[in-house]
Image 1 (cartoon, rainbow, N blue to C red):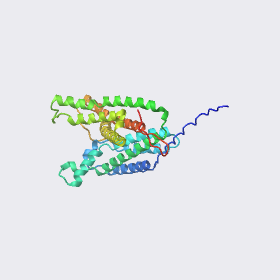
Image 2 (image 1 turned 120 degrees about the vertical axis):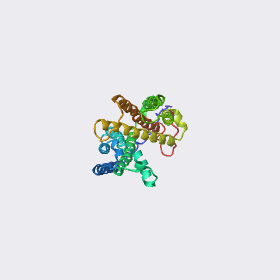
Image 3 (image 1 turned 90 degrees about the vertical axis):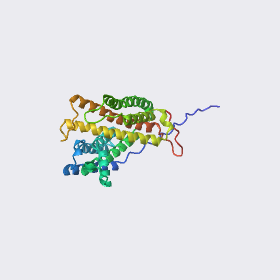
Image 4 (image 1 turned 45 degrees about the vertical axis):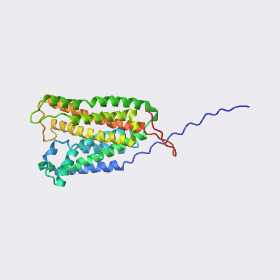
Length: 311
């Protein structure tokens, strides 16, 4: 009797995630352009915002967002890259929005705060809209990445997570170290330098978060909690880093009228280099969060539950 050995049928390929909707990003990009144009035409009535990054960064981010939308179906890689860069440019345009919000709080509540309760309302609106659009660009880029993800390259992603972890831990050192050096040096000009307890705590939390995102330790915690911490941390670092980097560059290039006196050129370079670590660390945390979500998400057929991903 002949025995027939049939090859088992290959497992069905999971369907690719549907292409992201461009509507939220398009609406956000248009609003950024409109609100930024109004802010530039009206001008600022508060001097504090003169040292913020130039408002035209919002236009750059909006244009890149539109490029990402247009290239969505014809050149997905270009669309994804444009969306990521658009989110960074829009974050740069939002630099200072936290200070705006604090000033608005005192202005609305009536708590005596003197000049700190004065708000650059047109600029605040433009920066706040840029921050919202940065979230929309980030979500669009994230969805594009999921739609083009190759499961066969999971090994490469594990290697990338290790590189991100090591790089991020290194970047957690410069700023706290600088503050410790200043503290040990005593008073600086007209202000007293205290022990940098908050800086040490903040960057220790950043290092711990990277460990959760890039190692198997994160699998023991709720996935949404780890992801939320990664995204919040990355946006804080990127926004504050962008405020300093774009602000300092704008001052040196004469793009803004105000100037912060940092002393000699060497001190300015040091401050720029140190705050560059904020921006770079924010980008690393964002990338680590993306890879963490990919490592802990598995597409499964309908009716089955996803098993925890092993890394």
